[in-house]
Image 1: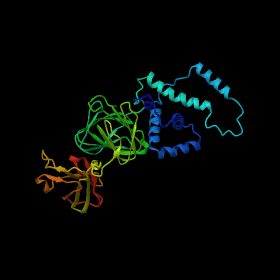
Image 2 (image 1 turned 30 degrees about the horizontal axis):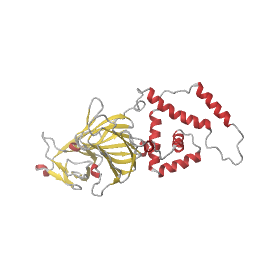
Image 3 (image 1 turned 30 degrees about the vertical axis):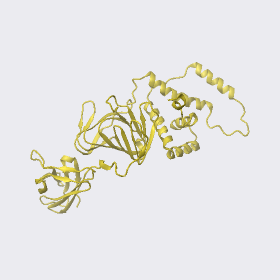
Length: 374
């Protein structure tokens, strides 16, 4: 790679300085609004802004580094040299040299702090959120926080981030805004308020996480080793030491090598649709149950082992007393295979219900639970 190509910078120093100033809240209102519109319209600019914003946020707790007296002396000399009455036709200065200086110093201080104090990992000040299971097969959490999903599973990674883990997927939480994908594949739904959320993918030959870094902006996307596919929003992918690549909605990126390409209509990423369970109370003794397979892959329901049925109805009366009704549909005398989009329906008989009884239906093997409606 030539030096010219290595240091090619399409944004330029001035625009990058404006992005830093915008992140630090140092732009005038009209300038800030203009730049905000550009960020919303230009994916490359949005990706760079996310990187700057994330960097400033991650190091906000770094010890302050004060400039040396010699720096202050040079600064005073620069200000004195430029002190002169403004020319009549000269437009208002966007920022004083003093403010531009401190913009540069702030960015430099953060970079220097990261190099001088390597112990200040980005996770400082970013506690790992509580991981709550939303649906699917039960996960396993190891002592170091690593989460394993033996089957299709949905978890909430703090507010605004829902992750669907495919079978045999493994993630390692790193911080509130970062996690490492160590095996398998994930489908992430990231709200705009969590923009900057980062996935680090381990190298294809093993190695440590960080071989590939994916930064989101309020997005729905799939990620696995060697591939990212975006359904909504944009993501910024950085491979090793190369420049980042922006992947937009409807595109996928495969590595090593390659550029973003359009997702084929025959290769959707919607196989991460968890099956749904619905239940309706038909009369005081009957509940209609529908299990809907919403995945692309076929789903097999087999008779349970150990004599424990798959479906349970739990009835809670106004006095707080609960009654449980394990149920095994007659169809489970043999294996039931649900093709994509196919429902599995049956009726559950229970003892007489009162109008103020609450009924919840659950399918333990899939981790699904729903309140029966009347």
